[in-house]
Image 1 (tube, rainbow, N blue to C red):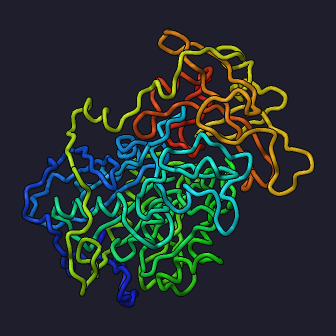
Image 2 (image 1 turned 90 degrees about the horizontal axis):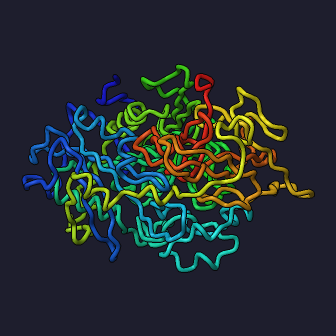
Image 3 (image 1 turned 90 degrees about the vertical axis):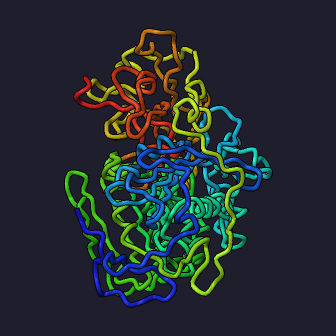
Amino acid sequence: MLSLASLSSAFSPHPSGSLPFDEASHTAVASKGCGSSSPYTPGRTTVATGVYAGVKWTYRVYVPKSYTGDKALPIIVQHPGWGMNAKSEESGAGITLYADEYDFISVTAQGMDDNTHYGGPWYSWNAAGTSLAASAAGPTCTSKASTTDYCYTSCTSCPKASPQCGWTTCDETVTPSGTGTKNVGGFIPGLFDTLESQLCIDTTREYAAGESNGGIQTYQLGVDLASRLAAIAPQFGSFARGFNLAPSVGVPVLDLHGSKDTTVPGNVSLSGDGYYYTTTTEIFHGNEYSRGWVKANGCSGSPTHYPTRFDGGKHKFWCASEGICAGGDVIRCSWNGGHNWLFNDPSSNGGLVTEFLLRWTKTTHVGMGATVGELVGSGSPLADVRIVGTDEGEVAAVEGASTEDVLEVDALDGGADEGTHGHYGDPDKGCLAGEAVLPAGTGRVCAPKIAIEPGTVHPPTPKCELGGVARRDDNGCPLAPHHRAADGGAHRESAFPVCLAKGNLPDPYDAGSFHCLLVCPCLGDGSDCGKAAHASCPGRSRCERGELRHRAKGVCTYHGDSA
């Protein structure tokens, strides 16, 4: 395992940026909570709630076993993806796995779910343009991706937008609009302030991370909390097109994307479900909307290999550094995978994220968002903070979702129970005419092809409605086969079809490569979607994350050894 001590002496001081952490010389800056009694039990995850601007939020706190309240520790806040609750995120992202070994406080925040439409859970973050329909660059989605199902009750202008491209809550997580750099506040700054007042935190070592929509939130936090955060690690996140920004001071960043990710892609703008994002190259090197992270961090020189203990292997993992950066490293990592945690494995994902973040310190942050020379005030802590406890019943009442939200009693028309003669079958047993064998999750599937409307050029217009998180029989895809639940009980709704730009090309949308896959509920913790999810898929296929923006949904996939 790589040392977390200083990596190099090649960095020149950057007065407002981050510096490499050197355990031998580092002087911690203690938060106001040092010396006080902790409301969190060391060695256990505790669930808590707090209120910001009248809205109640949920978060999970793991304090390491070594915690005494007298030694100031680093803190990492991980942000879940769209639809993912904090419990599942903590299990899947793997950050907490390293809290005892590296002696830091691990926090998993939970997004807001104020959406009354069927198809939830709807946990989400208002960041980087996700709640807005358009930017200076144009709409943030195509007309075929537009839907009012994604309208949250906090978004008063949502139904009026055309096309309707917003897909997250409008409750404040870091700025009122979720973008820009003015009026910074919201749940996450309030959460940091709350934890500084409750726990003994080293204020120079506060970090943010997150995946998918949580990765989008992480990028926005890197901009708006630049003087506070020592480093960020957005996992398969981005900015909506036209909303990318760069920090005013250096913030080290590690961007992680799967090379097969068409959901929030790293190399192209248009996603498989019809949303426009900012490529990682533009986030780092800038465009007409931002100077880019490279300039913000004072980078110079040519890109070089950034070594990690995960390099190479069957997943072809590789990281590159954007030269020598005075304000902190700017790193881009890629692996042979989709829209999922590194190697679909919590230990690998958590190891990569924590080992990067903990290498950095922002010596100018003295607490509550204040920098050296500024008064450390009381901050803006959350109101009505309550400890829910660790009892599973209590936790479920706050953050869980019933399987009734995603499974209903209903039989569908379609192919045979084993899924071998109907659509969406096992490629090893043959696909129907008009289907293509496509990779999905870590397996394959027979995916019905969808034609494009005649005369459309860029972007192509498919003869289907893109995306969606609930069953729609009129979206242009063939219906799913029906089958009995694995436990022999009453019919449950089969996994439902969704239309996506999906193919064996790096930019399937521009290529007009549209296909249908089956969406299944994925409410299991971490990488396994759970028995109910697998039972909703036809034949011997399994439900897997990695293809959809909604992280509480998976797709049904077949594997050669399942035949």
